Image: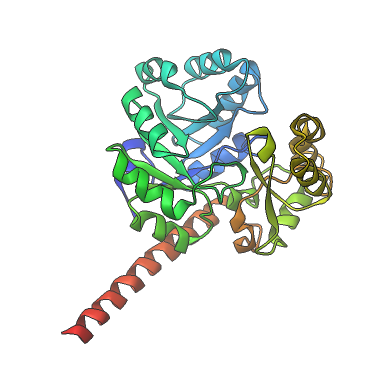
Length: 320
């Protein structure tokens, strides 16, 4: 078994965070991931404070293991969301799209660990100074809102820049990716796209089928003109968004893209819905229980690390 300090810090079997994905990461998925040995995460992006409290309560009925909540800092009611978390404590909060610094002391006072998602060394260092327990270094291979640096470059850069644990995210789909991330110095991985096809994920089945069918060049980045680029699977909507991007019409792009994530994940519109998905979708080949996904990833990761060590020993033998 591959264990790191994150496992002991949080109380999980495997060094794995499940990504917090709006309209995807409900209590059912979070509970299943936590029961499978990882850290399940409820996304708050599609919830308000009262429904978030209900979702946390539901997850606590599914699992007695640690789980967390993801918070998008851009939302107008972010104060209410954090208060709902404090009123219904979870083990971990992950954050994205902003700086959670002013909330960290109060969260930690209630025993809640904080892991912001970062896309640069400067933000990672700022989060360390603010008291974060670790950071999630997310490369641009990830689905949804992304930064500009690839995981292969970003992860070791942030590992070298901070002293707190780094969780690697962005393009990690299987055990080989997990092994690579750990070799780069990460203490855990975060996976989102692979869990889109977990049996416990309550999104529309059409979306899961589309992801399983995805090829290596089936994602693209939209929304660059808005300053908030998003990686999605190609469809009719993405083509129109790409056209508006090229014409530098960010306001029209925002209008066309409004509520389209819900259209895909809830209603199953795979042509005019927003199929936020990572670049590694082609490596997702079947719909499986969350626990099986986790076991497969870490069994393969252990084999990959062992194989690499054997190869290194062989090279040493040849040199000697």
